[in-house]
Length: 333
Ligand code: KG4
Ligand code: ZN
Image (cartoon, rainbow, N blue to C red; front, side):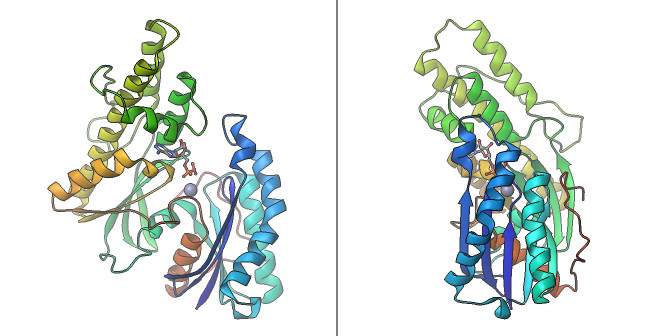
């Protein structure tokens, strides 16, 4: 079965053709990141306009790379949310129009679930159930995954998302956007013990996250330091901040696996590009005889292969969407 995936939730316009939920025939991504960089964050209006401009060329390239025509597409899967409403609308509307015009079934897919499904798009994945963790610029959440169509959110951030905290700390320190890679680069050369930032406190027993406190602690620490900050001080601040964040993410993920008796964790979202986070998760999970699965290469950032892959499995479970399906900007589930 050939599934055409369409993804447009943020600043990437992506289309992909996937065979039977696993074999990626094409995976084309166009990004408007460069246009947002000078504003220090994604500007929704720029993102939407860029999707309008790029969707058709990306779609045509995805089909041509897969060497398929519309006639050979059996299902169209598009991201329904969560994401920027104006951006989501471009991809979702295109998917519906194609579905209607070509009489191809259509299904709306949750973007966060798709990020988690990406971890299973590699040979020999372990079987359900899993705990899932999404750490991106807009989301930080844990999921209990019993099957592709039975995914429940068990924790989320009460304030800033994890990537957002990286971006804000980078801004406080005068580093570039996106902040995550900038902070990671400095943290590598820094001493995490020089400035210590307390782990966030949430309600006793809760698996929820909170990142605005650490970000504010960095801000106050910077206010107390002589200016301009030396490169060494910036490195040590980054290392201290990153260490607390990594500790927090791994503690919560591990605790969720213990509580739900899950042997494996699926992780997705932009922040998992962070090498120190990957290593810490792997080390702690191996120690407890548990497994961490990351997305294979090319499927970590926003892409449509993960959308097509998950769409295939949902369809096989008997699910599909009607053409009146609306976008889900907040991603309630
Ligand atoms: O998933 P993503 O590409 O976009 C959405 O938010 O949907 O995630 C982007 C976020 C940004 O906040 C960025 O700073 C963060 O991921 N990020 C990182 C790293 N690379 C990207 N955070 C920490 N370390 C990194 N190496
Ligand atoms: Zn994403």
